[in-house]
Image 1: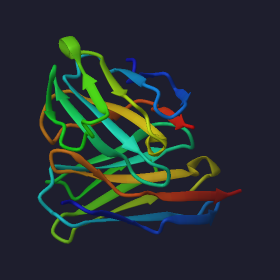
Image 2 (image 1 turned 180 degrees about the vertical axis):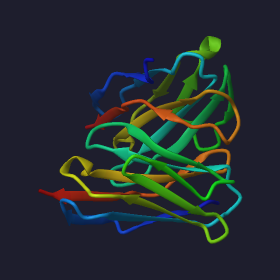
Image 3 (image 1 turned 180 degrees about the horizontal axis):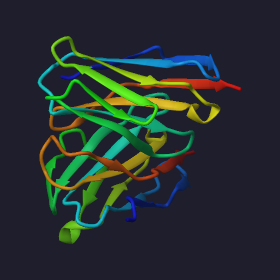
Length: 109
Length: 115
C-alpha cells in the first residue's frame, strides 16, 4: 500500500521568505505526482502535476521536483506572500491518488 | 469552462438519517471519483467510475454507502443510515480519461456534520 508523508505538518514564515515543502512516498511505481492547495473550508486546487518521466515542473513562483527513485518530491514557493497561506497536499498517482496529510503554511505579513 | 460542481455545500443531519450528495463533473470527463476527507488528513478514495461503471469501489463501506452514476455523467453518493463517524468532507473529482496518468480536478466538497 502506498504511504505518503509530508514534513513538516505546519510551517510559519515571514513574508518574502522562500518556502520548502517535502513529500515522500514508499512505492516508486507511479504515473505522476500532483501538488494541491486547499484553503479552509474549500476544495483542492491543482498547482502542479509532474509526470513520472519528469524531474521538475514550474509555474510562476512555484517549482516542484521529483526524484522517483528515492521516493521524494519537493515544492518550492519563492518570495512567499500572505496569500500563500493554505494547506498544501501532495498526492501520488499509481492508478489512484494517495494523499499525504498536508503541510499547513502561514505567511506572516 | 465550469469546474466540478457539488451540492449541497453543507449538510447537518442527525445520526441514523439518510443523506445524499450530488456531483456534476467537468464536461467531457469520463472518469469520476468520490473521496472522503477527515479533519487534518488527506482525502481517501471511496469509489472511481469510468463512464457509468464503478471500476474501483474497494474502499466504499457497502453496508451503509452506495453510489451511482447513471448515464455516465453526474453522480450521487448516499449514506444510509449515517453515523457520527461519517462527519467529514466528501469530495468529488473528475479526469478526462481513464488511466492513472490523467490530472484530477476537484470540486469544493460537501461538509457533512452528523449529530
